[in-house]
Length: 160
Image (cartoon, one colour):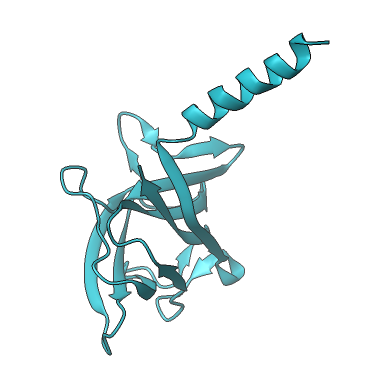
């Protein structure tokens, strides 16, 4: 009888230690209507930051089918911070595949998910003000609508 509580306690300690590297803070994905992302469709993601002392990592999450026609995606990411009336635009060219490795995301059947870090590993992201933040994503590829894109999302992890 005594081994069961001890085993549960040991399992709890191991899981607690293993989960201390990052804490999921926010993740949301939006479905792309008709799996054809028009550049006029700009999903927004809003969240509240309270802890300005911690470092964060920001990811763009993209899901597409294997029929997606490009090995990259160009996006504008607009960030609106607390107290700001206008959003700051950041243009990114995100690699989804290479000739050597194929799709870089995780795949199941013909669907691939990419979790692409938007944070520089050398300089972790710090939110300077507590409050509400809004990030908006716009695809800026030449093809419009951009076919075979299923979802786009944002994920923020708080680093310990």
